[in-house]
Image 1 (cartoon, one colour):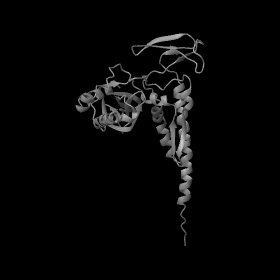
Image 2 (image 1 turned 45 degrees about the vertical axis):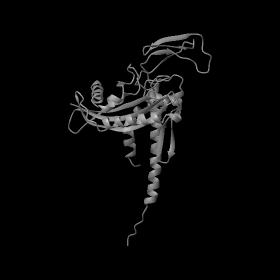
Image 3 (image 1 turned 30 degrees about the vertical axis):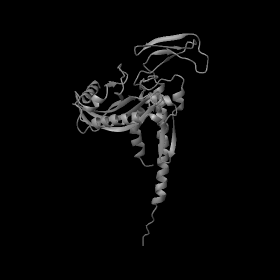
Image 4 (image 1 turned 180 degrees about the horizontal axis):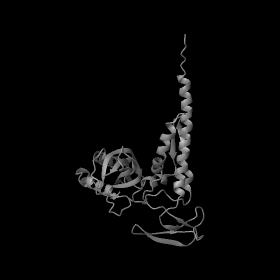
Length: 140
Length: 160
């Protein structure tokens, strides 16, 4: 799935406003500067489970988590600015990835759509917007 | 003259009762699947296990994690537990999460599978290190939902 990760990175880097307003898109678990705000991605599940029509090419059904992280150490009652900020970043991210077209080496993207999203307030001082995307890929 | 009798309401009730049973079966199967995925062998690091509720011994265990030195007090009972690697379902250490995974019934035709243990949420999505701990995501709920999906279609599409 490295090709998919590369495609996500390329999409992010070409995004303009999202790339300028955040400090990077990282694989969750990869070492990085953690300079807020930033985005991470994580492959939640990937099943190669069926073929389309008469094609023998496998269709992969991926669940990808894209998260926006924003550090905000203010008290919860005063964290409206943080909430507004992460909402703006979330909107930029979903505009970029909802029904996105991705160029993935060795695959054709059939569809990429948002399945769920959860906004969480971290008691340690941060906001996180976790979004799960379903991606259907077919081998070329 | 033939008489047409409408049994819609009765059939609807019967169908709903049937669906209710099936949903409960699916929720119970998903809970079992989650627990099984947590019990499966993991590929993370081996760490001595501290015993909850007991006074920790004086042995301090240190290792390097993500470029940082981590140390904690550990039991000298010699128990070792293998942690899960990021991306895998969480390993069972103190059985708090696995013991808490269950389902409930918010309405007749809804079942919710999950936990009331807060770190279950952190393990599912990950928790970044702003000022506190860092948890790499070990999704356990969504992969289980993916696995149960074909079964949902199979069970709910069959009437009777």
